[in-house]
Length: 274
Ligand SMILES: Cc1cc2nc3c(=O)[nH]c(=O)nc-3n(C[C@H](O)[C@H](O)[C@H](O)COP(=O)(O)OP(=O)(O)OC[C@H]3O[C@@H](n4cnc5c(N)ncnc54)[C@H](O)[C@@H]3O)c2cc1C
Ligand code: FES
Image 1 (tube, protein in one colour):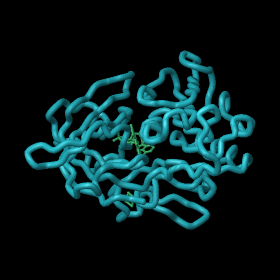
Image 2 (tube, rainbow, N blue to C red; image 1 turned 120 degrees about the vertical axis):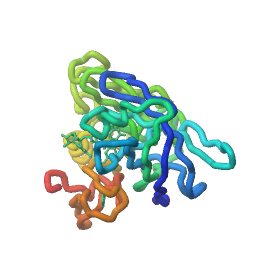
Image 3 (cartoon, rainbow, N blue to C red; image 1 turned 180 degrees about the vertical axis):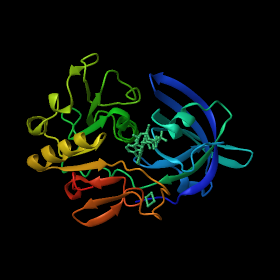
Image 4 (cartoon, rainbow, N blue to C red; image 1 turned 45 degrees about the horizontal axis):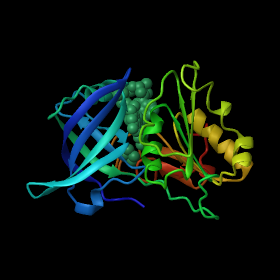
């Protein structure tokens, strides 16, 4: 499922550094196509600050849709993004101030499919595992908040801090950090393995994060015989399916990460062949 992308101008309503190099940026976005333009969990926007030294916008996932409202006859949605300051494009977005304008294309891409649980969701024994690595926490945390409270466990893996977890209503949250400063010391395998899937009775996994982490999730889910949905990252130029610059290899042929994804069923992805 995807919605029709709109090209529009957003206005920054908030920008603050919540952790070193991680920013919360809220943008008021006019709903150009009415209902069709409301972002859904898993989707992203192509954002470019105005003025900008970069030619191309940068893909940034929807973290939270805070509110929708009408002002002077125009409908707006207020969308929060979590942005890791990396190169020029993200530095400019993280350097915006209230009132600054941003070129916005979106919402773009498909969505995380809702779980098709064979049994009714049990609060004592959630069947859904959601996994975020680093800034990849943003889209999966956004998705998680659209699910029933306590119907999922959330696994978050960071280098040396944690963020993006405050809206979660998970049954349990497991955190790892490389240096052990928060949660368990180590990476995802320290808290999530094939044995975890069997013991907890997970039937589906959703994940976004660095590619080695996603390859690991794919492997353990395949061994455990359950479905995983993985949100992939690629460098993007157009963001709307026109340039083929974000192509990834799958067992079903080449796919565009921006248009056919970014969420793919894990078993069709071919890591190491991208
Ligand atoms: C669908 C999607 C959703 C995303 N959501 C978020 C988000 O919510 N928050 C966030 O902070 N970032 C997100 N990203 C990543 C973000 O788009 C890149 O970090 C950004 O484009 C880098 O641009 P830049 O101009 O800051 O850096 P550049 O100067 O372009 O690059 C800086 C460094 O980052 C690398 N890089 C650039 N783009 C990517 C990419 N797409 N994947 C991996 N490495 C890259 C470059 O190789 C270089 O080493 C997302 C990417 C995709 C594809
Ligand atoms: S970025 Fe152009 S097709 Fe995906």
